[in-house]
Image (cartoon, rainbow over all chains, first blue to last red; front, side, top):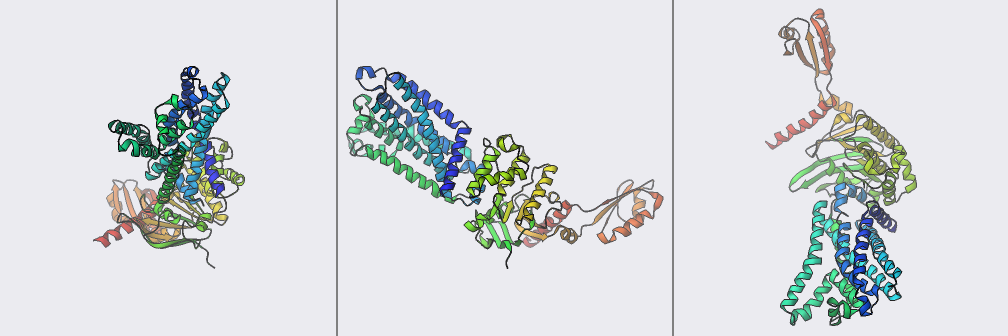
Length: 276
Length: 306
């Protein structure tokens, strides 16, 4: 069983390296994070906060946009693509189970994400350290950012697998994956913001809004990371909310795990119904 | 002692109220090479998918080595090559083969030897994206040979292959069955089979319409032999009067005759001596035999519906 999961994971990772997905992700992540680090380091001097910490604050907002996108783009092909190429017939005519297959894909894709994140964000951390902005807590902040980004990625990988197992055409799966990104990353926050403006002191703001943030892994991710950074005063916005939350921030982290677990189980159930 | 490798019993498969396969019953013994023939949409691929457990028959049952299709026991001893399989273009042949060997729980290093058997020893280190159609098909076959499958299912393995590649392909099929595996391969043309299979199954509109050796099918079809006689000067009508048959142009006559009358008819033609310029004997081709069986089924079908 583990042998087969590892085989699939290894192959996915190899494909990620071979088709330059990892390279592309690293380039994008490091380019954006370097830019943010250089631009964001200006106020650090006046606020007496570590440059690394303030960079991580900007990078968590970057992760909210990029990591789900990369994850969805890695995942949408997982089932529909194998159906279209005819390889799923081969794979499932071997003694491999549906759950082994999808778990293998997920492990491989998470490794791809981890490598891209480590290289992309790591290069920025090293650059900051080399220019004298590094400290131990800053490195811990970076490590937390990379680890939680991978968890966020897992949640969106699972969503991508659901889409991929739902439709038989790769192009449809791709379109749906982009749709999910647009809804959960862009429109969801806009809708929350609108509702908050309309009802800034009432029932929504106090009782619905915090849980609405938990329900979306991208918001939960931002919530956890910003409150984990001991820099609330300066990052503002979302972090201000973190203090008035009706639950400790670690609940936000747990909710991403729960979301990912539920989505992954859903994807496996869907895959069991797929006729390759 | 039961050496039935694949058994289909009154199998019916319905999609949206339409029968894709009906009343399908046959058995395959060990080390047999059997061809499953039929038009596109005759139900061949549906049958393969049922034999692999991807589809469950609406009625009837299929057994693979006495086990349920798709069960661990069945999957462990079945190999399959789908009709059109596109391996990851960015991976090399060796990487693809090792992957499937590991999924099947077989020794990946030993599987590499199969590349040599299908003539891809050199190309194994190159990416699949650079392969020709024939090479990709051979890689697919190598994948199907990993381990020691007892049943090898090949869905249209030779479609799109050039004659030489096809020859090589059948050489391999013979080798596989020589090692004790039963091979069931599908095709839409009888001419592709040549004499490389022990038995032929013909499916038409989801039904099995023939199940025999090629020679028996040829005899059973009782297709006429066509003689084409060309006269030197005589007009075709005159020739037709003397020999029977129908004039086809001003100097040629076509005579249809049964297999057993062939010699007598040719003797009659040659007795005309100097009048005859040329004679052509056309035996029924494999395509004619195939057409005969699938059309016969069509006729019976429409007679039944009327």
